[in-house]
Amino acid sequence: MPLYQPPNVNAPVLSQFSLKGKIAAVTGGARGIGVEIVRGLAEAGADVALIYASSADANETAAKIAADTRVRVKAFQSDVASRNTIAATINQIAEEFGHGRLDIVVANAGVCANVPSLEYTEESWQRNNSVNLDGVMWTAQAAGKIFKNQGKGNLIITASASAILVNIPQTQAAYNASKAAAVHLAKCLAVEWMDFARVNCISPGYMLTEMLTNQPKELMSHWLSLIPGRRICDAAELKGAYVFLASDACCYMTGANIVIDDGYTLP
Image 1 (cartoon, helix red, strand yellow):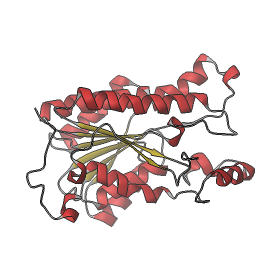
Image 2 (cartoon, rainbow, N blue to C red):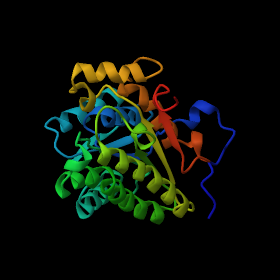
Image 3 (cartoon, helix red, strand yellow):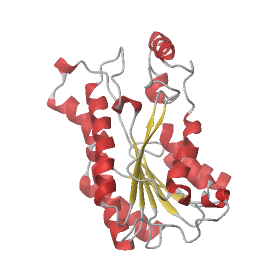
Image 4 (cartoon, one colour):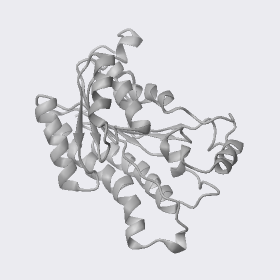
């Protein structure tokens, strides 16, 4: 079966970005980049399932976005590190929230820790990888089974500029390696799923999220000195890229990794 092509490739370009009538799910959707992805997909017309692990206000966040965008947004608690748990959640979203359908899944959940490589234990190493790599795989696997049955689907993975370079001065080998693995996993899935799904990545640079803003000021200053544009991105600036990948505007794109980092990885 050929890669999906929209029924009218000559449709006005802005209409191709519409997600009206689509059903989407976003892991790690309650905060940071994730909540902006949820907001962007909803603003483009999709009904969105916000998947979270441990947010106290996930339901309120979902309700606020729903009120602002006038589409359905609902929070679902899950654990991407557990294959069975996230599969059950994805299936519940498709069956109940999507009324038997799921069009877009964003594997966005991620964690990061600053650990010198000689000090990793099995537990601290696995803590990063269980979310950043295993969690992507289990989310993708659950979504892929639904996409295959439907004959069409769209998986977007949030990777990182850390998949391309080694961040300094912090030591985060587990994070960097897991994000690099997630990018290559996306490429593998893009080829393997060519007849029923598109799979792409977005690799953000430094973002104004809790993962960054809780760091010491001297680290922020150091990172700014390494960014050619000399500023750190607001997470809301990413949502247009996710809408692009989720939409019919880029139906011929699969296996790509879009780097959004203000030139950070270029020098």
